[in-house]
Length: 513
Image (cartoon, rainbow, N blue to C red; front, top):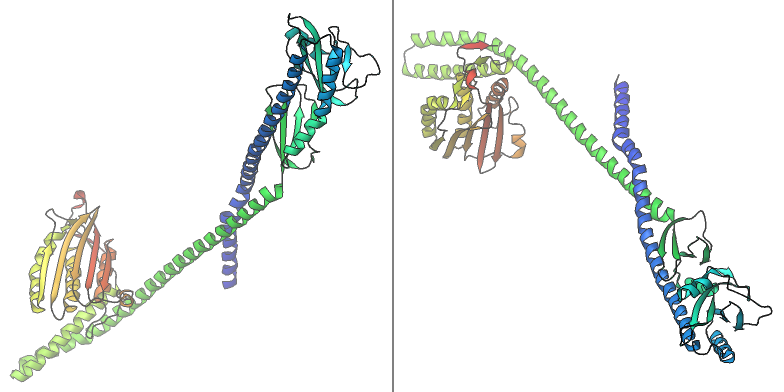
C-alpha cells in the first residue's frame, strides 16, 4: 500500500513538473526563438543600412567627380571644336593620368567618333545610343547603361556631354567611358566583410564585391543614388548558430533551471504545508485521545472525590478542635483544587457547549473588573482598562468569555510575582472584536511559545497546563482565535479575536450542543 501511494505521488509530481516547467517552456520556446531571430535580423538590417549608405555616398562622390572631370574637359574644348590635334592631345593626356577611364571620344554632330584616346580600327558611330541622344536633347551630361564597349570590348558605362561653341551651337559630343572594374575596386576597398552590389534601374547587376553563399543567413538593405538611377545593395551575413541558437539555448537552459528551482521551492512549500497539516491532524487526534482519556479519568476521580468530600464534612462536624479544623480546611481546599482540575479535564475531553447569545464585550469586562482589581491588588500590580465608547457585540456565552478573561488575567498576574502593570483593552476592527491582555511579567522564550497551547504543558510548579488549552477550545467553538506574543524580560501580550455579531443576531437564552 505504501509503495502504491509513493508511486502515485511520484506520478502526480511528474505530471505537475510537466505542466509547470516542461510544457510552458515547450510552448514559449518557438515564440522566443522567433523573437530572437527577428531581433538579430533587425540589428543586422541596421548594420547593412549603414554599410549601403556609406557605399552609396562614396559611389556618388566617385560618379560626381567623374562627371565633373568630363564637364571640365568639355568647357576646355568648347572653343576648340575644329582643332582636332589639340582635342586628341587633351583626351590622350587625361586618359593616361586617370585610371578610372577606359577611353575618351570626340564625336561630331552626326555621332561619328573622329578623335579617340584609344586606337580605332573601324569607323564607329554612337548617335544611336540613347544616352547620346538624351545629352543632345537636354544639353546635359547623361550616363549610359552598363555595356561592353564597341572600341575596347571592356565592361563599361559611358558619359556623354554635349559641347557648344560661344554661339551656343553644338560643336561636338565628348564621351568618357568608365571602367566598371574601377568601381568594383572602390567597392571592395570600402567593404568591411559585407557583400555589396551596384544595381541599375533595370535591376541589372553592374558590379559586386564577392559571391554570396546562398545558404548563409543574411540581412539586406538598399540605398538609391541621387546622381544616377542606380542603387546600392549591402548584404550582411551572420552566424545564425552563434548569434541566435547559442543565446537561445543558453536562455532556454537558464529558464529551465530557474523554473525547476521554482518548482522545487513550490514542492518544498507544499510539502511543508502538507506536513504542517498532517502534524495539525496528528495534534488534533492526540488532543482527542487526551480528551477521551481525560474525560474518563475525570469521571473516575470524581466518584471517590465526592465520597472524600462528604467524609471530610462529617469529620469536620464531629471534631471541633481548632487544630483539627485547620487540617480539615487544608484537605477541603486540596479537594476543591482537585475538583477544579477534574472540571478542566472534562472541558478538554468534550466539545464546548455553544451558548447562542449576544453580549456586549465591554459589559462582560465591567462585571469582572472588581474581581480582577482584587486579584491585582494581591499581586501588587497596577491595573488599567481601555474600552471603546460604543458597544462591542459578540455572539459568545457570557460565562465562557468570563472564564477566558479570568484565566488569562490569572496567568498574567502569576507572571508578575514582584509587581508590574496589567492592561486590558477592547476594540472593534473590520468585523472582529479584539480583547487585548498585556502584562509586564517575565515573558516567554520562543521554544515555550511553540508549546504553550499544548494540553498539560506548564512552566508553573502547581499548574495543570490546561488553562490556555481550555481557552483555545472555547474560542475555537465560537469561531475565534488567540494570538500570543512574548519577549523574555519584557512581558506577554495576548490578543483574543472573536467575530462581531450583527444587530439581527441578538438572541438570548437558547443553547445548542
